[in-house]
Amino acid sequence: MGPVTVSPACALQAHGLHVQLGRLPVLHGIDLTLPRGRWTSVVGPNGAGKSTLLKALAQLIPHSGEVHLLGDPVATVPARLRARRMAWLGQNESSGDDLRVWDVVMLGRLPHQAWLAGPGPADALAVEQALRATQAWEWRSRALGQLSGGERQRVLLARALAVQADVLLMDEPLANLDPPHQSDWLRMVRQLLAQRRTVVSVLHEISFALHADEMLIMAQGRVRHQGRCADAATHRMLEQVFDHRIAIVPVAGQWVALARDD
Amino acid sequence: MVQPDSPLRRQARWPAVVAGALLALSFLLLLLAAAIGSTGLESLTTLRDDPVALQIIRDIRAPRALGAWLAGALLGLAGAIAQGLFRNPLADPYLLGSASGASLGVAIALVAMGATPYASAWLSRLGLTGAAFVGATGAVFLTLVLAQGVHQTMRLLLAGVVVGVVLGALGSLVMMLQPEVMLSMQAFMLGSTGFVGWSACAVMALVWLLCAPLAIALSRVLDGLSLGEATATSLGLPLPRARVVLVVTLALATGAAVAQTGLIAFVGLAAPHLVRSLLRTTHRNFLLLASLMGGLLLLAADTLARSLIAPQELPVGVLTAVLGGGYLLWLMHRRSGAPGG
Image (cartoon, rainbow over all chains, first blue to last red; front, top):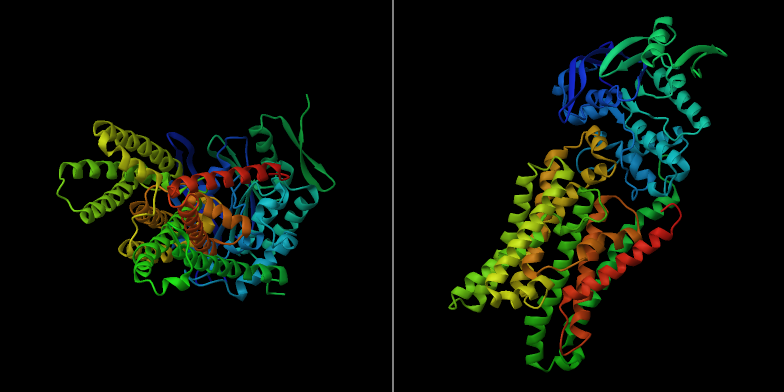
């Protein structure tokens, strides 16, 4: 379903990405390459510009510099095609309390539908798959406003999944999720990766971020480091940007970030 | 597996059922409104032999009832657009300054007409309607200019407030300088369906036929917007263009209603809420239902206003304000009592 004519190895590339919010410069010339079919987690202290980077990559805020999506300059890709290739899940966005869960997730199918045409069977199938993937299928006829924070997050996650985009950008996707559903989210990401999809997530929970393939460490609007999550250099840089207030240690075969209590 | 299951299917029929009920009620009320006169309820059977009564129905009551319905339908549609566009359940059609713009237009027109006493009643009526329409749409245009476009919802809202306050003050100033227009202004600001004739009905019907399809064609943008502007953009929706069209639609529908019936309060605010309390649906159905609900509301209010203290009648705007205000208060009470609300 993705583009097959070109087979670029990179999901997203950015060159000289500058973003200014009001008069405040937030991103100072970001260069990055996000490999295709991999999971990259973006981490960094508060105010590092992680969410802004994700929004700029998703073309949701004005920026200078170039962004390439699957090999094409994103500025030349029509909005609907771009929306089919790249999905974005935000944090703390006000959400349609009056819409039913089914209708919310169906909005993820908008890029696939002709302007005045209604949803078809393929759309209904995609919505059902997405709702089942986040264990939200049971609430499909309830209004979003009737759900708890974690339930709502799972519906919004399903909305992003329903796009079936090659590149999925997620800003704090684990917000409000309880531990079992955090594990479910990990499993869901692994399934996406098995389908050669690219996942980019901003996560404040460092231990979760360390499950990714690659890690992009940001501080003060700049990329400080990009490398594999298992690398010792990545761990050292993590400890450094967090002022050595955390320690990265192996526990039961996983890398875990511990808060230093001294 | 693929098809939505039975509760969804059952819900899918709801909008059609509600629309049918609203239309049927409106039709019954239209008949009732045509039968109610200044002498109370008259039976339609005796009217058949009475050419004068028949003419009253044809020339006065029928266009007035239909006009009330149409004005309400325009306001309901405008209210639903405003609430979707600004993602705010308290948004109403007058939000972008239409109301005070229309009042200023009417005040100026009244003063100008007072200066030329030879203007015929028909001409003056047309002049007032035109002035109200120009004032209402001009105010929205001014709001757009001040907000430097439609891109920032917050700026648009603030500009609307500023325009509303400033034009409202100018309108009051005009009234102070020419106190003899005060009485006519008062009638306009309270809203009345008393002057609506067939030509006004035709104008409003035409505007509705233009605005409703436009709004419904953009209903997906409103759906997307309910998840936030960034999400809507990420879905590939043409937000800037769609916003312009929606604001123009909103201004047109509001302007047409205000020009014919004055500043009718609360219909545009209450109609969408009433629909929401009946069912939850996407904007495609919601816009249409809110419009039907607005028509029914204003027609019901107008019929009540004519019959409550017959042979006198209440300004319908007073009635909608009291009923609409009461309804919103009740809604507020119910919401605050609901768990998690």
